[in-house]
Length: 175
Image 1 (tube, rainbow, N blue to C red):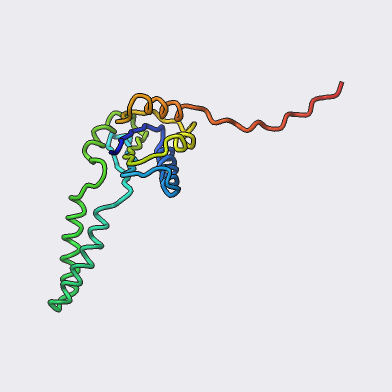
Image 2 (spheres, helix red, strand yellow):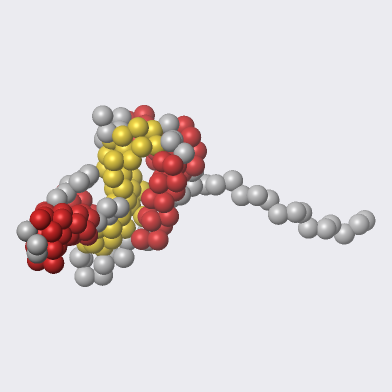
């Protein structure tokens, strides 16, 4: 079972930074993400989704390959590639993987212009290690499917101030 978490951040850069941190943790097998999308609201109120996977481009590439291959059979590889690219692009555009785009745009409408929201679909997580690495990242939890205990732990970790390394004490005058 997957859990959905939506966190608002003051800037797109901060949301991207936290998403990258989660992706790095995924490489260490601390978390398994189903999707991680940054939604940005511009000054006009328009919402742009920065997806991990561009299904339109992937569809165009795949369609071009298969179209060219089928075109070779009929001795028209260029026409096949063009037709394949067009149909692959359309198929990729109409495909939605992960979190529903329409729902993300509706949810992101609640954030202020110039800010961003990070939508995370979590399949598996080693909670204590992930929360430790998210300490002090900031952000406001907007929505979550976590139980109350886990949600409270996430809110506390995001709000917790990172321990600052004290600078060496200044030299005190001798008496």
